[in-house]
Length: 87
Image (cartoon, rainbow, N blue to C red; front, top):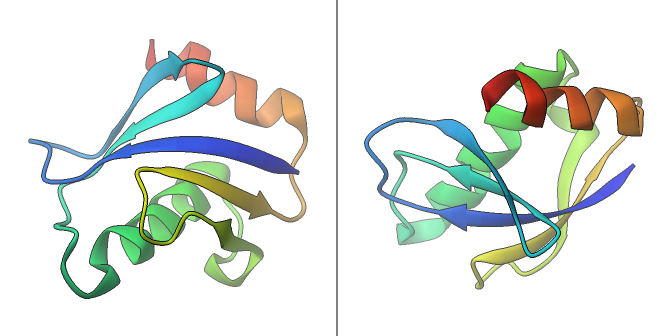
């Protein structure tokens, strides 16, 4: 499954805050420095989707707020459940 994520670093807490322009909006406490927000995004999505961290990787957008993320072993319904559960 490949999804588009819009990341907001340095948030008050880690959370899925909905969908923005077709992308999953993810707020993360991690700062942008040294790729910490990218690493935190992979860890957070793996935790929420109950998959190994190795199953989550950023395909593009390493230096952008908008990222294309591949999550292996999950379905679209599981991703949509994250949005509805967090909303």
